[in-house]
Length: 144
Image (cartoon, rainbow, N blue to C red; front, side):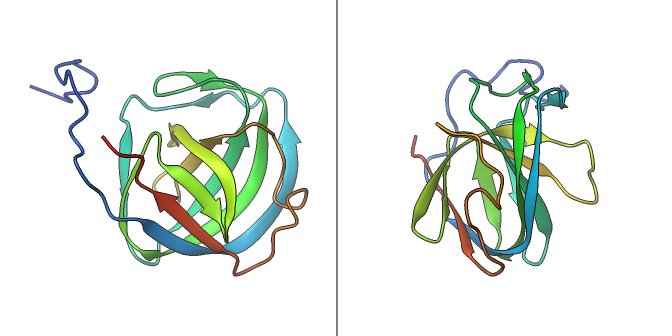
């Protein structure tokens, strides 16, 4: 049968409920690129486990699974403190600050880490956002 997302055999959202994925920043980044060429995978979800470290990248262009994004800002890396499943559309917060929604995932550096691509109304690096190590990170389920 293969991958149900690649084969387009899922016709509705299948996630009815999902717990938040929480963590803390372990790296604050300061870079922006205009021609990154991130290739978002077709799958709208990725499981993350406790103690994994993943990268957050901010975009402001409309993008989703299977798209390529070029204009990016590097936010930072976070360590997962409570694992779960991150979904496209989940809201992303750093401390109480709303960052945006998950647009998709890029596996360029996997299995070392995933790139979690966040759609926002702005494109700022972690330094531009005045982030600090150990700021809390939370991915909140967007609902069905």
